Length: 293
View 1: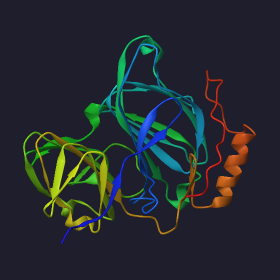
View 2: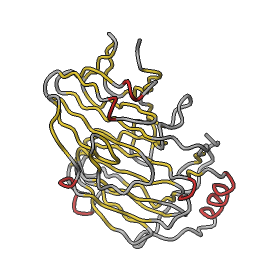
View 3: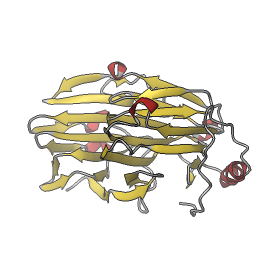
């Protein structure tokens, strides 16, 4: 019997002047463990006149994780951070009670041809930590645990698994794992996982219970402890999940919180421009009018 409970396909979404493939949230699955949002950026080839420009916008009640395969993004935030992220590194920003940030092509690359490809992820915070002070951490690629096992290459981008721990300072039990194959491989890693679990297929093919699944899909497991699959050669997957929270978390635009009243206040505060400012930025993204999800 298949352990796959749900298949989610990428859907196109616009984040300003850049199209992404949105995977979470999904109408039938709002979260996987504490993971509430997953965007696949690119792959995009940008001309010398094309740049990523996401002006200052706010967040509350979550941590954002940016992980690139190609390209460079300049992150600026209201804490005072200015940091370029390059492939294999992790930008981990915790919004807590409120933070504002922008994401742009660095000035030195704005008149050259360039590529951009990566993942942007939101992780909800536990109820007792939703209103903590904002913070930012940058973890270099060389500091992410990486090893060979069962004829595949594994990276533990965030959380705990396989008896290892990533230096990304997460706030609840979770894991984000990259697995790459150069030849066909069979993996049975259910004993390493816990809570809710899902797999995003970036490239290549996955076989499970006689079925073949291809790129740009999320496979949500019925039971994380039963996670076993076959990878075709030259495939890359991301396995993510962890312990779900006992209370529901609501999403409105860039705001995530277990209390709708806090989200309503954040909306009004953004309209009134009461959030802290990002140094050297004058633009901002206006509040849209989506419905609670």
